[in-house]
Image (cartoon, rainbow, N blue to C red; front, side, top):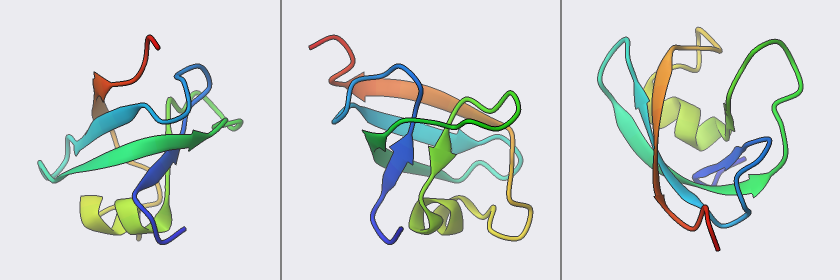
Length: 74
Protein backbone atom coordinates (compact mmCIF):
# COMPACT_ATOMS: atom_id res chain seq x y z
CA UNK A 1 0.00 0.00 0.00
CA UNK A 2 2.82 2.42 0.84
CA UNK A 3 5.28 1.16 -1.76
CA UNK A 4 5.33 2.14 -5.43
CA UNK A 5 3.71 -1.03 -6.72
CA UNK A 6 0.97 -2.12 -9.09
CA UNK A 7 -1.22 -5.04 -10.09
CA UNK A 8 -1.38 -6.12 -13.74
CA UNK A 9 -3.10 -9.13 -15.32
CA UNK A 10 -0.26 -10.41 -17.50
CA UNK A 11 3.06 -8.65 -16.94
CA UNK A 12 5.68 -10.58 -14.98
CA UNK A 13 6.21 -9.79 -11.33
CA UNK A 14 9.09 -7.37 -10.96
CA UNK A 15 8.36 -5.55 -14.23
CA UNK A 16 8.97 -1.83 -13.82
CA UNK A 17 6.44 0.51 -15.41
CA UNK A 18 6.18 4.26 -15.87
CA UNK A 19 2.56 5.28 -15.24
CA UNK A 20 1.54 8.72 -16.49
CA UNK A 21 -1.72 10.39 -15.44
CA UNK A 22 -3.07 11.89 -18.66
CA UNK A 23 -5.19 14.44 -16.78
CA UNK A 24 -2.33 16.20 -14.99
CA UNK A 25 0.92 14.87 -16.49
CA UNK A 26 2.20 13.45 -13.20
CA UNK A 27 4.16 10.23 -13.47
CA UNK A 28 5.54 7.53 -11.23
CA UNK A 29 7.59 4.37 -11.67
CA UNK A 30 6.04 1.27 -10.12
CA UNK A 31 6.91 -2.41 -9.87
CA UNK A 32 4.36 -5.13 -10.68
CA UNK A 33 3.90 -7.29 -7.59
CA UNK A 34 0.33 -8.55 -7.86
CA UNK A 35 -2.36 -9.76 -10.28
CA UNK A 36 -5.38 -7.67 -11.15
CA UNK A 37 -7.29 -5.50 -11.59
CA UNK A 38 -10.46 -7.55 -11.55
CA UNK A 39 -13.05 -4.80 -11.90
CA UNK A 40 -14.29 -3.19 -15.09
CA UNK A 41 -12.00 -2.56 -18.01
CA UNK A 42 -9.08 -1.22 -15.98
CA UNK A 43 -5.57 -2.05 -17.16
CA UNK A 44 -3.71 -1.51 -13.91
CA UNK A 45 -4.25 -0.97 -10.19
CA UNK A 46 -1.65 1.12 -8.39
CA UNK A 47 -0.83 1.27 -4.70
CA UNK A 48 -2.14 4.10 -2.55
CA UNK A 49 1.30 5.77 -2.54
CA UNK A 50 1.52 5.60 -6.34
CA UNK A 51 -2.03 6.97 -6.64
CA UNK A 52 -1.13 9.86 -4.32
CA UNK A 53 1.92 10.74 -6.40
CA UNK A 54 -0.21 10.56 -9.55
CA UNK A 55 -2.75 12.92 -7.99
CA UNK A 56 -5.67 10.51 -8.29
CA UNK A 57 -6.61 9.67 -4.69
CA UNK A 58 -9.86 11.61 -4.69
CA UNK A 59 -10.99 10.54 -8.17
CA UNK A 60 -10.03 6.92 -7.59
CA UNK A 61 -9.50 6.32 -11.31
CA UNK A 62 -7.81 8.26 -14.09
CA UNK A 63 -6.82 7.76 -17.71
CA UNK A 64 -3.17 6.73 -17.79
CA UNK A 65 -0.45 5.77 -20.21
CA UNK A 66 1.74 2.84 -19.22
CA UNK A 67 5.31 2.40 -20.46
CA UNK A 68 7.18 -0.84 -19.78
CA UNK A 69 10.70 -0.02 -18.59
CA UNK A 70 12.09 -3.52 -17.99
CA UNK A 71 11.32 -7.04 -16.86
CA UNK A 72 8.30 -7.89 -19.03
CA UNK A 73 9.96 -10.57 -21.14
CA UNK A 74 12.20 -12.41 -18.71
